[in-house]
Length: 577
Image 1 (tube, rainbow, N blue to C red):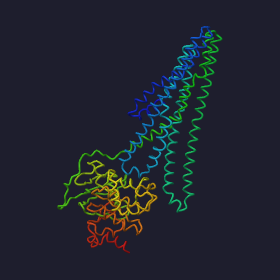
Image 2 (cartoon, rainbow, N blue to C red):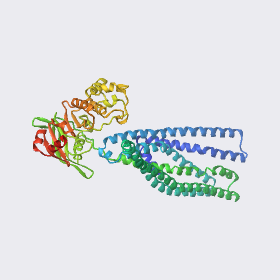
Image 3 (cartoon, helix red, strand yellow):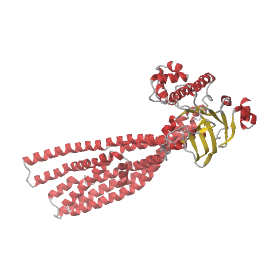
Image 4 (cartoon, rainbow, N blue to C red):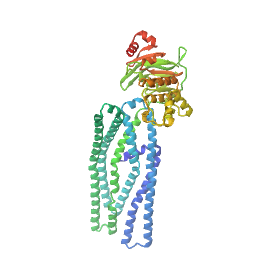
């Protein structure tokens, strides 16, 4: 229990001082909590001894009232110092998590970790924030209160104090055994929660496909199975916890009865006065309440322990190094032209699977280089490595003569605009979706970018124009409209390098012309790296690279490659037919 409490304190970082200060108020609250009982003992003692008078009655009444008020004050201060601090701690932690996720390689998100991240954000952090941060001072209060009760037992009689310590030891033994059981089940419970989150996300994201293929029964069964599995584990958790909880209650009852029996025996033997016997009656049913309540928090804290494990696991994912200090220059040249992009013997692997093998090529400033080839050949990986979605396994990628690992990710991304087939728009206004390209742009610049991207007209036909809020992922717009908005933000960004995953490959003929015009505006005086699907769109490329099996097997312009009558010529022939 103390280790789990220490873990909770450890994550508070700069707020540790507030948490530790709350222990002082918890200590004072613990004193105030037991003060009425002690005052009652003195009151009854004075009555029985005939020493009570008006002054003592007034003093006792005022003291009890002051104790109650102080207890409320200390509890309020403790909540401000601790529970409120918990919300601040996790607000900071969510921001740190966002910054951490931003720096992770894309491979982390393609390896099935979306459910883990969602579960950490929506379940683990919320559970600790709402259920556990406010418990720390309570646990300290319980410990202090139990200590005070034991002291009172020793004051009354050493034998009563020793019996109280023995019963405390039984509580601790049962509590530790309960801890082992609940820790094991809490880990399983949280893993089931993660699995359920993944299944819910998968079902929600694929609902269109599920409906179109009439798979609602099959997919719903998988989701239902996950809910049933989660339900079963939650019940198993309670079943495992239940016997230990009952053992704590039995210990409480039996321990209380033993203390009463010993006190009665000592009273009958004349070894305890009638005043202490009455005092014992006052304290009796509050004797072990604190230690019972302390271990009553066990279930919450063991789930907290498992949640902390998963939070730490996400934070432990290795980030892409972003410690580059160098600046981009124009020193790399080839044949009198600036080689803006250079791939130098680049190899890359997803885990143990090689994807690229010793890829080398150069893209001169202002030129267009197209990547073509069969699916899975490595075209998208080549483009993704330029944007440092991953880092190369060996070799290097240079932009304007600098290894991209030696410059900051921020500087690198300032030089690159990316347009992919699959567009993602945020649930926000159209204006803000375009302004992502350059947040400090004026409204006039945003609207001009929309005009160049051929999306101004349809935007102005929407109910709120640029201030229209679109659905998550751009769901309320057509595919072509989404694509043009994504091109508008790239135009606004005005980066010198453009990575283009042919944006017209999956749109209708009506939108294709507008998108081609938008792309022409985007690509003016830019260095282009194009992933080509429709080969007719890259006939005028300065260089075409045929990528297959992770290697460049052909290189040249359209005419040269057609004369070679190799893989490229065969692909053109197939598409033409």
